Length: 107
Image (cartoon, rainbow, N blue to C red):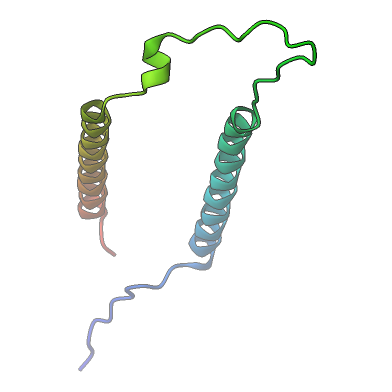
């Protein structure tokens, strides 16, 4: 008597190589995005208001919108909206992945 053995968790050699390359490409892309984000933030972090030695004129007053900051309810609204968008994207990707797995023929 012979039992049918499924090969779950094993991949052909060519597919495993592609997956390894894909993981490497994702890691490089994440590193590039991190470097790009830090390059965008660093100039603002090192900015300073330098007053000349002669005293000069006082710096111009910024409008109240810039000095007061953002109200707490707006920050909360942005955080909640971004969490809802992230959850919706995660559910959509999970459903798409499940549908593509169900559509694959088994051999």
